[in-house]
Image (cartoon, rainbow over all chains, first blue to last red; front, side, top):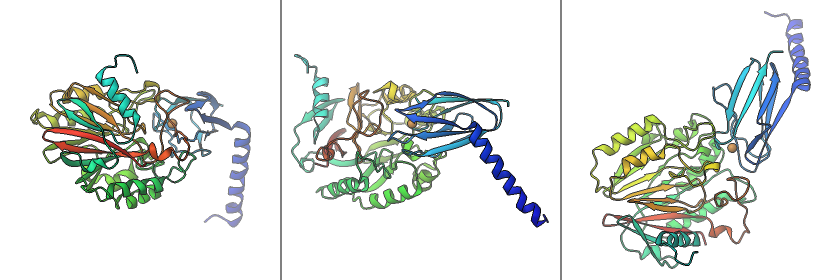
Length: 108
Length: 304
Ligand SMILES: [Cu+2]
């Protein structure tokens, strides 16, 4: 069993870590007029990337390599995924496959 | 219109012209017949089936804030027909966001349709959860959860195909190799005189490449169908009527019961088109298909 003191301290440390990471490295991709903007984004490993749909038509964010997948995002809906591993991640909208984008994750 | 319009062009104009044009298919050529309000009841032949499409339950934007309402109106219109067909085909986008609650509402409303057995294929809006769990949980039985299947009704061979689950980046809709192999085998033993109806969500010919209004591997499917004397390809997806005739194959897209979309290539993309409220019922509707001997005739009816 964990001591009471330990159980208390652990979530607090996590909370601080999440808060500082998202403030420092957050990236937002706007979905508008049937495009991901910007289409190509480069981030450091550990970054949260957020997509926000500003079209009246729903869109999705679907990895071509099954690494991440959003639900259907209606107008103003957001989807966030944290990219921990360096690499190139291509994705498309599964409703409009003409819409494509790439996230490049580089080592910190 | 040009000074000397071709027959096909005249047909297209009439089709765009709107409410209730009856097309009689004869040897692969569509012949338009003037159709007064409610005349679908007096049209010759047997009512074979009804096509409903793009109900988009869950949509709630300006282009139509009451999508369940217009579906109810559509259902009332069908239920008021004197002779109702024995089956209904829904060509997909039953829901807007593939949510369980949207499917439940759609199911409940569609159960009120007194037009026989309901057959469906999914649209891309129905399978945004990836595996299509919500769709297949409700509509997967007929196809053993593959989505594509065939059946016979009144001597006509019906084939439902799925072209919304095999997308390639930058691509159009797609069937994929497994489904094409199945289709080839399904058609192999059939006599060329069997009338064929193919239904799938996305158009099986390219209407607007940049908007993804087409199916990348449709040509392969069509190559199996060309030997048949009467083939009717029914699609949805584009929320408006566009049609063409190629040899013995008639292609026709249906209106939505939810909201119209812009004509191909006009504007930012294939999103909802906001029209004045009094025009909306003229842009929503269904397609009825009747059987005359070995020919199918299509008629499109709007809500107003
Ligand atoms: Cu999209």
